[in-house]
Amino acid sequence: SKHLLSICGSISTVFLWNLVDETGHVFPILLKSCKIPCHAGKEKISFGHLPYHSDWMFLGTTFGNIYTVNVKTCKHSNYVIYWSNAAKVKGSKGAPAET
Image (cartoon, rainbow, N blue to C red; front, side, top):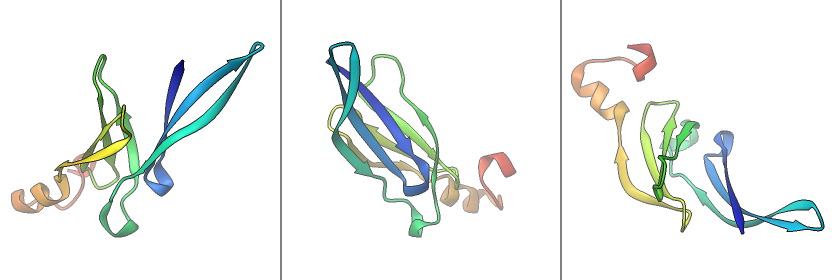
């Protein structure tokens, strides 16, 4: 079967769909979803990257932080790159695009 990953940035959620082909028509069936624990609801997912042959998707946010999600289980990892915290240490006032 074929699968599809979709990201809804406004609610910071990743969806894993199964694409079922019946008589020439493809129907999506939701298998799993994963809400990313972004900062206080203000941070939104703005980018997703799934490396070739990887089980881990990287999700960038409007704050510049990077979260990881296992695409097979649709569960987020506790491993997070907090750019917003690193930028404070280095004296930057914004996300990577703003520096």
